[in-house]
Structures are given as C-alpha cells and as structure tokens.
Image (cartoon, rainbow, N blue to C red; front, side, top):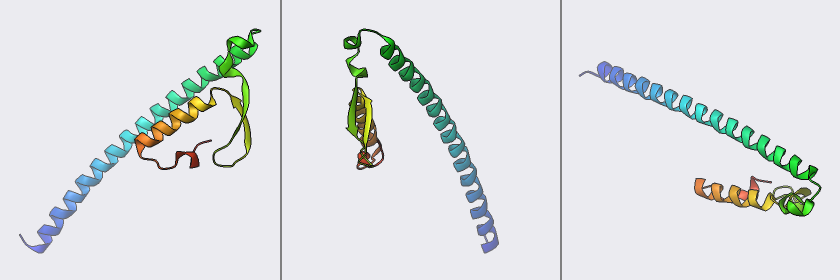
Length: 109
C-alpha cells in the first residue's frame, strides 16, 4: 500500500468516526430534550402543588410550603423559598456527586 492509499484509508476511517460521533451527538441532544421536557413537567407539578397548599386554609397541614429565608449558595444573597428547598439542595448535590461535579454549591442556588 503506498502513502496515498494509506492517507485515503485513514481519511475514510476518520469520516466513519465523524459519522458515529454525529449520531451520538444527535442522540445526546434527544436525551437532553427529553430531560428538559421532564423538568418542565415536574416544575408544573411543583408549582401547582405549592399553589394548592397556599390556598389551603390549614397551613399547618403543609409544613414544607412555609417560606423561609435561605442564603443563595453562589451569590450569598438571601432568598425566600419553601421549607422544601433543602430537599432540592440535597438531591442536586447527590446528583452532582454522581456525575463527578466538584463543589456543587458553586453551580446551584
């Protein structure tokens, strides 16, 4: 095999690898889109549950919906969130750890 044939073979191998990477990237975009849809659905559910709890006259029945002041992890600013906010932080940090994200408090609220 001469040098030109070797280059052509290498070029073909690179084209095949590029196509595989494009297909993988397309699949990852699809997965990210599904995750985004899932997040939108969960967000809608949470907002509806909070609104329903806020409308309930028996506030003691919904202790996780009571508003508390927390410190935003990145900005240091005070934010008012429901008492369920620590659950969010715990789950966020656990998922960040699973994904190998160091110092999740630097990327979450």
